[in-house]
Length: 178
Image (cartoon, rainbow, N blue to C red; front, side):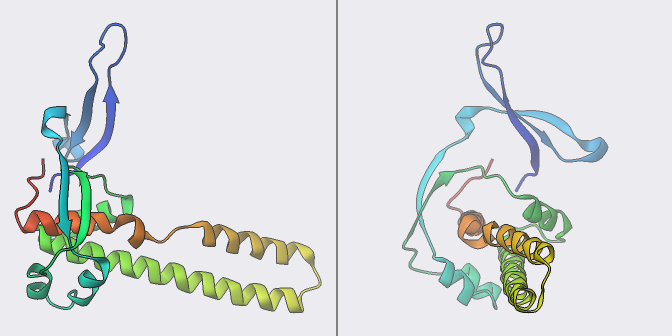
């Protein structure tokens, strides 16, 4: 897995009509500007395992690696962006092999989603208490706004399971990542 960041598309102007995918590789003084030629970005259509199968095998690396009977469609590219939470997780890992990365990503996503769910339930309880006990409309309104903003925040797992699947497919040699 390569850590490309600040990816953008340049070009498409009158002086340079060709579009280029440009990113930065590495960080600090080691950072280098790179171009990713579009011919290296491939469409993928593979079968992978489901979220539930990854959950059930999370306790053992051997089980995680040897998951069988993939039935879920994986239709992406051989390059994927990572959200900041997972980028930070990746940078802090000692071992960066695809299985270790996938398992750690899944653990951090589960932890994030559990905290989000707990926060929403806690705030719902606080709102109920404030609504029944408070005579001031301002404090109740502020808590309502906080709860609404939390409920609008989506969980990571449904939106980023493809990252776990990507790493798993890389470990199985099905995806040649660029």
